[in-house]
Image (cartoon, rainbow, N blue to C red; front, side, top):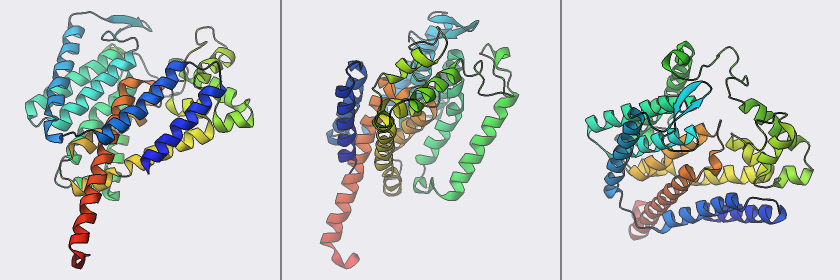
Length: 350
């Protein structure tokens, strides 16, 4: 039961928070809000056919951000490169907004001209944000959404299609090795040493500090976590750089490991599995299922962007992720309830 697992995870976080008096209450409140929005999604009466308004709102959001970028406002210098932030504090937040708007547009709109405009606008914003990790999603998300909205949506996860999607993604990533990012006004990238401190913009140093802190923690802390702000404390002690002291994890997976421990991490991953294992069933039973398409796309964004950003404590995406996951769990239960009712009424068909 996804609800029970979620409740158990939040209870574990409460114990984690109470046992670490130096915790930042803001992070704990964020996790509680995720659970709250999941419950709202589980209980809210939401008509997917009315979701088109999300698409038009997202297209308007993309247009506003592009206009702001073209006006020359909201730029900061990042590594000698002018980077558009769109008024956000971090450039990754702008890229997240572009990807979320792109998801809503493709999942709810049917006009091909509007879809093309949303794709161009989102790609432009991601390029201007210098959030290179987000570039593959500009191509991957539309492909996934188009497939999931087709009549054969239930066949998306067949081994043959999965191999095809994986091969296309691998080819797309390989093509990036021939791109001169610096000539395009973006931060450069040396593919001969992809995990160097220069390429990861200091993230590799942060990750090493987190792993060192975890390795030196007690067995109890390794199992149940060192506190919801333990990542910032780890960089302050082990990074060896005054510029990185107090920096957050820049990786959701390492954040979970250090802050909630191995057990907390496993429970969270099982929660994600419990929720999203229902997607395939929804796709199989409901053609052009917008809710599950949006929910699955947001999960893809979370899993991918988490490699270089602690998305797990970014409500900008996580609230939407758990709200729509609550909606698709609700939809799954409705489908199952309907099937059980039909089976009881027509026992000869079983």
